[in-house]
Image 1 (cartoon, helix red, strand yellow):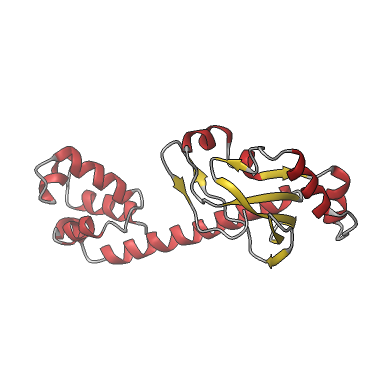
Image 2 (cartoon, rainbow, N blue to C red):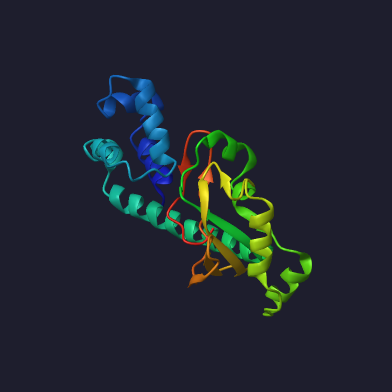
Length: 216
């Protein structure tokens, strides 16, 4: 039984109306109490301060509050893992080999322009279709370094090289979803290979979420 079902049962067993809940939990501000209650029954069982208020109310807590909270948290973790797995499958299926630029800053300035156009607009360079095919089939026929050098020499002020993330410092040839060859932007010498799945932050007009990535 999840926390919503459990608390609904407790309210029914003890004839507790919604309007009585703030007073039972010791709140003077009823609207605030009900907002937190709705969030809690909606699954926010990590709100320990609110959980303590419910534990202190025998009519709501009953004998199995913690069990219901633990069940809810477990279901959330399982659902989150499933969602992450499905999202990764989607990204793998949609992946196309490309070149990705890393810059001197992880956080853009100004941030609104990246929120408007998307991060890929300032980091991703598409490869010709014939090159994508060779990468996807495991081939390594083209001199990608020469193509990147020509791009840099021909477009020194391009947004991929100088933009809201600052100056480009590394370039990654992403041949598969979770593999990339990392080159120094100046010398185009190979620095390392990366074998990690991409983790891209979600950028809004006000903040950047999900940072701490290796591959884009």
